[in-house]
Length: 407
Image 1 (spheres, rainbow, N blue to C red):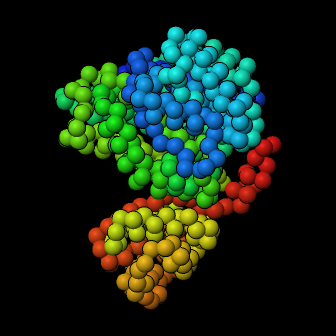
Image 2: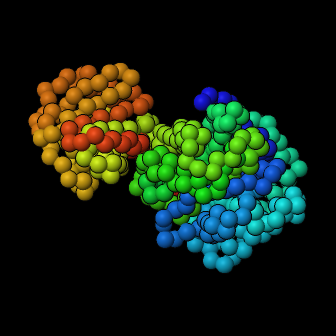
């Protein structure tokens, strides 16, 4: 596998565009269009929130239908959630605008939205945006990058990645983009993400691979404990790499899963580090747990605790915050088996050893914790399972950002 430049336009046959549609923002691009020159096999994962945005319901229909997908239109600023029939009609109108401009069936067009809940989308602006973008679709890497910027809301940086890997002697490319900064909590994929590959693969295997990888990547991040109404991950595979089709879980399937896992973990960590108001990436590694489920539960509890997040922000090596979170997580363990360390590029330090605090150097702890990425490493000494979760610190700016989000 090789990391290359680009995002959603890196793979063969994919194009993108973006524009200023003035849906909510008045000074930046706020619509993006991703298009496959050929109909693509698709898969997806969606929010587990009972309150699902209209666009989520629309996309779930496409993924479950077994029909191909050929385009995705995304807007930022308004979430199109809690909008009733009018919101669903806006999805259909957007898809039909693509059908009019590009000549593809509207039921192959996915839509996605992010932003304020409870506001209706201006359909006229959506249709005008589709018309504008359809005329400037491009397969350039720059077009993909600009699309990744257009889907941002409170994100401070755009998020994109692309890789190549070999399948059946053919070079295959996988690229993607995502957005996510607030309302991020592990309960599906906790944001918007769009992946494009020229791989040829059976739909059921594509869905299985995505579902498994999401469980260990996007589902292992948290910013604020809020699971959005709009969480969506979509992948299109158009087959233009001309590899032998993947129809079983063979070595080619595993190679694809490895690349998919890398891309999803990269985007997930980028979102965790870009949490609203965040100054640090906060990672929890739990090793030698009794089960994978326990390891996941423990690591997510550590990064999800507000007290843990505040300690990371304050560079406070208060290991009690992290042990407490582990204790109420629901996983059963013996604290007298536990070892806890702080790690960063400035070194590592054990602070708790099998039931007792360690007399550690506070200055060394401060040096480790002041880095922009800090890891809490926990050895459970109870088995051989491990898991990693990602989050961010909790700063004053998180409240400031969310206190006036609609403004």
